[in-house]
Structure formats: structure tokens, C-alpha cells
Image (cartoon, rainbow, N blue to C red):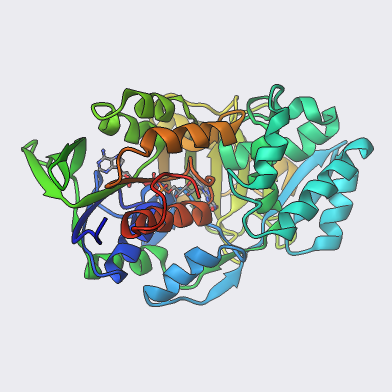
Length: 438
Ligand SMILES: Cc1cc2nc3c(=O)[nH]c(=O)nc-3n(C[C@H](O)[C@H](O)[C@H](O)COP(=O)(O)OP(=O)(O)OC[C@H]3O[C@@H](n4cnc5c(N)ncnc54)[C@H](O)[C@@H]3O)c2cc1C
């Protein structure tokens, strides 16, 4: 296979931007085709009054080496520490887990978990720390743990560990309850827990937007089908005006969630499309609300909540504590196409609870931004290593089509970035075997 000259990238989320940049740097003429009218996908760039906020993925781990390298290539940014700080009410007491304070985190874990689980958690943590790739889907560790996936994650741990420790992580990363998550995918969650998080000092939409100075991008353009033509692929496109066209490329990187990739590939391979359709996604709704005064304090910046629609409420930044991000996810927070007024009613309920737990006074909202994500988070499947192997096999006949997205290495921004770079490498390399797993 020779290096493709003209390559299409479907989707301008993190995975698509990473693929486009890698292909551009290798000398390809790249065109990104994006359904929406801005880049970022599930980073969810939006306006809150006069400032930009993110209604999707936002926190950048210190271990996000590829994503940080990509930001450097696009112009670079400084970082300010954010930390994952999540408090919970355990036995009537507010217990904080703060990734910036390891001793406190360990104390919190001891208070939250069943003793019999500590050895298991410690062993998985050590293995995830021990190898850069262990925190991704398809790793040796993930495959090994996945042998026990006949039962969900909650069956492997005690009741306290499941409720206090696992649930906040699986709901936060996958929108899944612990009885909807699997042991074989747990290294991705442990990877998040062991990381420390920052926020970039330069606005991410401006930084990632520099990709549009390097490659072509067509906004409000839906890719509706992919077919193989002599020496390349043809994409069926529908533009904002509803006009249908077909464009030929030498190769294509499909950088969308699995459910969006499935219909594009169905005419080529029903088995590939069937596998993509089987990947589970869970919804989330996010509201970011600005107040005049701080709601959270420096040491309690977020609270994970149970048995109610709001799973997590937290300050937008370490110092920006007058802006609160409310996430509605998990089994009690799965809203169906909610109107903004309905979401704000739920915010009102949560505000009451924050006042009770944090001892703050009622104050008016000065700006709000709301976004509902019907398929926010990838929740994977049990026995995911087998799924990835089957996907690689089904994709193997299509050398000029590569896949990237949250269902290959994990939902984190870093995993999506790596999957985009890997898709680019797959299309570029004559020697790398074709497929979707590394
Ligand atoms: C609420 C929320 C909070 C999160 N928090 C964090 C966090 O703090 N840290 C972290 O690491 N991760 C976080 N994540 C996860 C992370 O943000 C996502 O997994 C990641 O951004 C997904 O990137 P992607 O490029 O794979 O997919 P997407 O961002 O979904 O990009 C796919 C793009 O493809 C486009 N598209 C789809 N179909 C077509 C088509 N047919 N034609 C043309 N274009 C198409 C879409 O419009 C979209 O722009 C969060 C996610 C959510 C939803």
C-alpha cells in the first residue's frame, strides 16, 4: 500500500483531530467532514454568558501524554492544576477524595471501602501504574481481568466498595452503574483514579481549532455512506442545505462513536456494523450555572450524589467556584430529550441539597448553559478483548478504512486521541497490519 494522498476524516472530535493532524504531518491532503458547525464533538464547547465553557470532556490528566503532545503541536498551552476532587456523604459525614492529595485519598478509600477489597484494588492499581498501556481497553491487564466478566463489576466487590467507591467512577466515566460495568474494563477507571488532572490555560476550542488552519474542514456535512471504489473509497455526503454528493478519497478514518460508524459501514460489512451497533452507550445531561458568589470551597469542590438524577455537582475550576457544573447521569439521571426548563428544575433540587451539605446561602443564577447527550459515554461490553479481536477481524478486508473513537481504547480524551493517531498510522503504514487494535 502506498501513502494515501487525499484522506477524509469523519468527525472533528478529539479522535478526528488527532487523526487529521497525524495524516497532515505525514504529507496527506486531509479533509475533515463534521456534522456540527464547530469542532470538539463531546468536549461540548458552548457559551456561558461572555465566556466559553465545556459541556462535555474537560479535565486533562497528567498521564495524557499524547493529547498534551498534540496540543503542543497546535501551539501549546500552560496548565493549571484542577485535581479530581469528589466528596461523598458517608455515614452522615462529608468524605473527600482528592487526586492531588494521595495520603488523604488513601484515608478516604479506607473509610469508604470494604476491607476485603483493598488488596484487590491495590493490586489492580499497581498494575495500572506499572505499564503505560495497562489503563487502556485491550491491554494485557484488561484482557486478563476480562476472563471474569461473566458477572458485572458489582459482583466482584463488597457493598460499601461498590456504592461508595466504584459507583462514582463508573457513572462519571461511563454513565454506567457498577452492575452495568465489567471487571475487564476497570483498568480504564483505575487509570483515571490514579491520574492528577489539570485544565489548560489557553482555551481548548481556540487551540484545537488551529487544525482548521492546517487541513480542510467541511462543517454541517453528514457522511451517510462509505463505498469502496477502484483504488480508494467514496463517501456519500449531505450538506447543510440537504444536497447529496459523492466524493472520492484514497482512504478514510472514521472517527465517530461506534453507533455512528455502524450505518456508514453496514453496506460494506454487516458483521462489522453489527459489532459496532452492539457497543453500549449511556446518556448524560450537563448544566453549567454561574452564580455571583462561590458555591464550593477550596477543599470540597465536588459532590457525588446517589439515588437522584444529579450524579455529580462540582465547581467549574479549582478557583472558579462560582460556576457549578451539574451532571445528570447513571440510572436515576437518564433523561429523555429534556427541555432546558426541566433540567433547570432538577438543578433547583440539587441547589437545595448543596446548600444543606455545604452551608451556603441561596443566590440567583446569572447565566446557564445546558446540553443533553443522548449517547454521552461509551459503556463498552463484557469480554471486551474478544470484542476487539472480532472487530479487527471484521475490519481487516478494508485496508483503506480505519476506525477511531471511544470504543477502541477507552472513553478518556487521551484514549480517543491515541485511537485517532493509531487510525492515521494504520492508513499510512504499509507494514503495520490492517485492523483496529494495536
Ligand atoms: C459529559 C461528559 C464529560 C466528560 N468528561 C471527561 C473528562 O473530564 N476527561 C476525559 O478525559 N474525558 C471526558 N469525557 C469523555 C470524552 O470527552 C469523550 O470520550 C471524547 O471527547 C470523545 O471523542 P471522540 O472524538 O471519540 O468522539 P466525539 O467527540 O463524539 O466526536 C465525533 C464527532 O463526529 C461527528 N460525527 C458523528 N457522525 C458523523 C457523520 N455521520 N458525519 C460527520 N460527522 C459525524 C460528531 O458530530 C462529533 O463531532 C466526557 C464525556 C462527556 C459526554
